[in-house]
Image 1 (cartoon, rainbow over the protein chains, first blue to last red):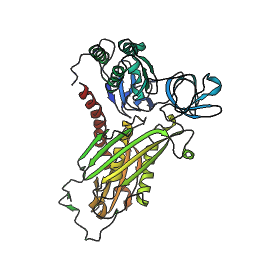
Image 2: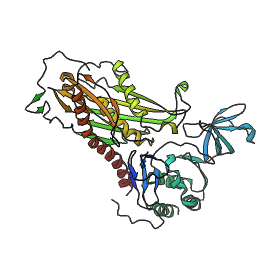
Image 3: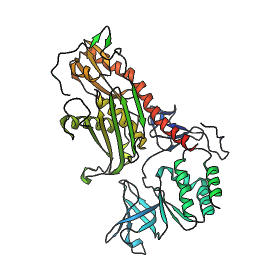
Length: 212
Length: 247
């Protein structure tokens, strides 16, 4: 099944781990793990990279964190601001005093997470209304692969399709102009194959062959 | 469970049980992860003649709002038997006294393993549908729901699994079927965290001496690694399969 050779870009072989699986006999601190009796266990279904000691979740909802970029839909217009659906268990709030533009119900915006408190009240800033274009929704757990190391995958998509692309950490991706159909197809392919190695090469091939 | 007026069958003949199993033998068990498209996580379990479907949604916004807890996610669980799941009774669907109790104990199993404090104000909804019942459905339901929760990407300390043990003719026996459940001398569903054998649920119906209780728990613990291995297998297979499709 895994005849593909390892890619040379540091994508190590990772194995699938399940909640409660022992990862190390010593206490190690990594995201999505927990320590009990001086041993480290996985708390989620994820891909575990033994060499770098990293655990990457395979599934899961979006929980906002500071400085994330999100693509949201205005759900409610209030006097003080706007509540925004950000594809998460928590709603975002965009204070009216920080936004230059008046939004309407149903407007699609991109924004930055300005503040997250302990009960997950989310304050947004730097909102921008997204006109036209289309939105592709993927699992938030796969967003890092769409962006790639130092934006490598995203730059690849942008140059190959000529589209304007905004990737929200919440799993919503806004695409406008250029070969947007191809960009959407590539993004869905990335989502489906996010946990495999050699993904960049395959996306390159797809973009090259179909982008003519 | 409905007791039909019938003469008590012989549950143990030459050390073999009604379905030909040994005292410490499990019924055939099959687990499949990720069977539903719309749910965040799902699992299907065939355990003997039990057919059980589990679906998980969330963490998502808690409805009704006043149930939400600002410190942690609340877990909702709905265990339900389909009207066609057994031979008799269950003519009407919908929650009844029995299923409400089972929903509550299953919920408490998962409250002990889910890292709920990572998702304040939200709810995690677990649905367990018994399509066909043959004894030990709450155990099969817990086993299925654990896989569904993991498939939904919900952080947990462990993958709980459960099995029922009981007493027939003064001997403890593993994994009770419906007939043994109805005519045996007592049964005891046990849910365990396989990582450290922490007991998450222990109910008991019938009379057990202290010694029998100890034996019964020990017998249950021997089966837990087998059940857990199948759960892990189901999850890993689900992702290996995804790999193959693209490969």
